[in-house]
Image (cartoon, rainbow, N blue to C red; front, side):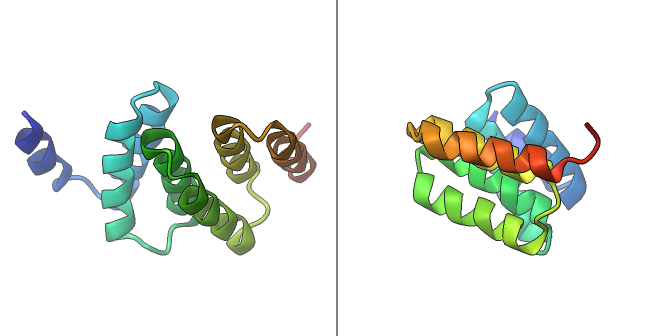
Length: 116
């Protein structure tokens, strides 16, 4: 079955793979999300959205917190005005047990989100 999924993934665009990965993360299917997000990144390495979600997926699926944090931070450095990037970073910090930094990231995201 695994090979069927891989063959199907090749038919999707980077944006479609990214959207699938985000949905899989939201439903706690971290490994499947990671696979989709890695492929999306291979197809479009310039996507800051992909960087942020890939960082979170690395942390949640494989406990690669440092590498995930670096990707999330890179996305924020490139486009600091996306609250979702801070949310992803905060979730990563929570998963790693760093509540203080998680709260900081969540607050920073709320500051960036001007929609109230």
